Image (cartoon, rainbow, N blue to C red; front, side):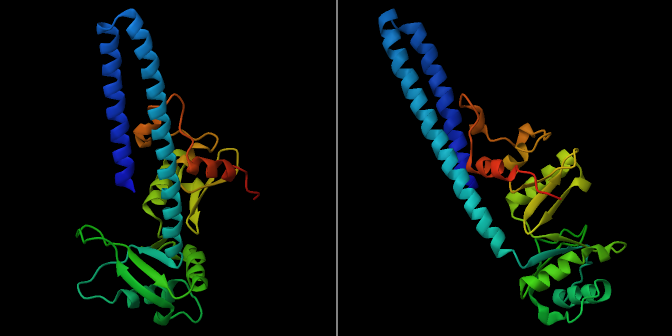
Length: 248
């Protein structure tokens, strides 16, 4: 999906470049009558292409949102454990079970509560890789997640296993609003603004809809800059609904 978006952005940039060159040549070389007729045709064609590209962009954003939500559902029972030292021949399930037993004080929790576990990424040797732990049911996962404050004072932390889109949005939210004003729950990013109101987001476009949010220009899509007005994506439509304040 990212490759499709990149291709679309490249096509848009190329179209704008070629159309600008054509428009300049048109004014230089054509007669007044021909220029008027061709200019009208050119303007109509340009509007049609921009409209088509905008529609394609919206469809890509819509499909991206659906895929992201489906991917997040598959991670519903999974948590990430950070700060667990790596060993050459380790049983990560046993390591996590030991951490939970020693720190979280959860009754009836055992290695049987874990369906699978593994380290994420390749070992860099600098710091331990996080451990992805998939629990057998969501209830056990939630018990472990809501007991995470008991890990304070240890070298271990927990986080939700967010998709790339949500992870990027979460990091950006922390940059915009502050670390202590952002958190996640069930894959949803929650933000408390300076006036004490609480908002939720799933992507960068959602963050842009939150009052007081300062968008990062570096993260904006090139396609959004070529039309006369900003593209209203499905994500932004969803954001307008999530903009409603959640009562505390």
